[in-house]
Picture 1 (cartoon, rainbow, N blue to C red):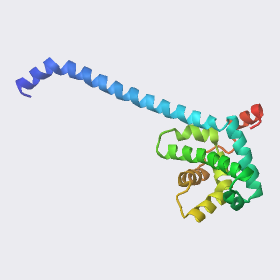
Picture 2 (cartoon, one colour):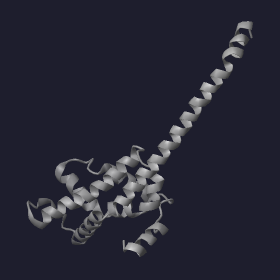
Picture 3 (cartoon, rainbow, N blue to C red):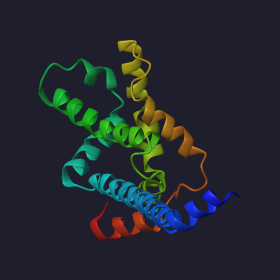
Picture 4 (spheres, rainbow, N blue to C red):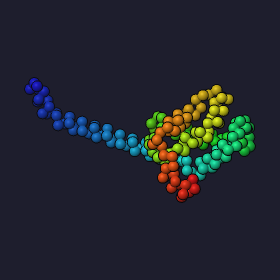
Length: 176
């Protein structure tokens, strides 16, 4: 090392180390804050499904799944069927929003797996006849593509709880 190099380091070395330490701690703090915010967003989105409007939408969706008359529902111009169609599409859009958020890493997938469990997969499987019908009629094969992608990935994922404790506790407390 030349004399000028050692003089530079002895003069500015401690300051450079301090700047480096500050930058490193800021980077770590930012990473932790991002992780916490992603987990919180996932938690909030999952609990959105327990709100009373979503409970009503889920009930309408499940009733229509039993009837399996999706063509009539899609053709409805007014009345109860048209209203049900809007509610069902809004309900399924929440799952699509969740799936997009997972794929874009906006929310933490592990939190949703723990809270939602296999419900996302079951809802996709129940909605598939409707989704396929809309895709066929509209020619838009990307309709609910993110919902489908996540459902297929979770279907074969052993870390997705089938009947998680949290879901059981929720059912016991509020009848979900």
